[in-house]
Image 1: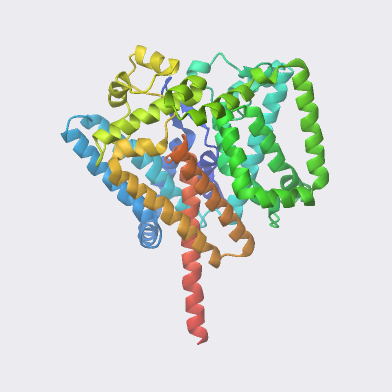
Image 2 (image 1 turned 90 degrees about the vertical axis):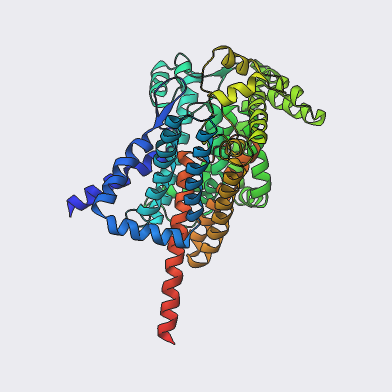
Length: 483
């Protein structure tokens, strides 16, 4: 019995790394590998070897009853379109084989299957919810410890943060980024903007924990803390990341999704809200007395907003370099798509093709882009818009297949709510909203549709759809017996 429990915990291990989307090992300045990737592969192979029939049966049921079939079709299309790119000589055969097998198959396809397979057989949906909540608390706690350590210059805390944060090699000598005396927190992530993005995507789930009646922990104090404090702590964390674009996104998300809920929350927990407001006002007064806020990231937000009426890409690129780099990159990726509209240039083929296009960019290049081109590196390591990447790498066909997969997943998960209890149903609704935010950010900014965290959200969704399907079949069988 103990042996089976040990096996069960080992099988769950990659799930922890998938929940921590920043747990990576850097291989070089431009490449890294996730710990989830390193653990999912051997565990998945182990499951396939000990339970081959069960795995095959689950895959067939999954393919028949969930939108996963479209993800499988996308994988097949990546093979076909990549082969066409090889034939037309803008994709090397070795790179094509590496990307299709390792880059997509083992990094995205296999982890998605893994998540679907272990839920609920090895970990129940309630345990998944509890795991998410624990991860949230760890992430937000590390962020605040980091802020205190940087603000008070406590060396031991700064050293620990340097060890647990995923610092990129080029930033190895930078412990914590500081803007005009205010530390920018990154928690466990490689940079503050990624932490802000994580908060934006997870806002619906964060507010679910604030409202749920599920007793997630046995300790009542922990349940009350999560309900009343977690949303406020995450919103303060978003502010401390000092990421202007994501702060704008978070504000829009709050207004669109949670306007009424926030008002109800404020009325119900008025004392908590007033306390938060008083602390915030005191902090702003203190910061304003010793720091000119107009010289901090607030100015970056103002610059972005002022360029919108001008409707000029060049003016926006100049006004905000970080945003400008993304605009330049996305615009040039779209230009590549127009040259190869049907099957693209090959999945993850982002080296020489993009460099060649940037050399003839119709939009002014930022200093960062010019530096990359001057270094003559055959790899572009810049955050890009996932939609443009899919368009120019897999063509219009690949792009449409993936969109169908996402839209079908959203529709199916909404339908699955009918066959779950009310509290799980509310979790499903929050999960659906997080996927919509992820999908929306991939259209308008730089969220990657194919990364470890997107994999786990979509994997949980597929598992819920399967659970709902089985519940529906069981209800129909019970109804047939009663008749």
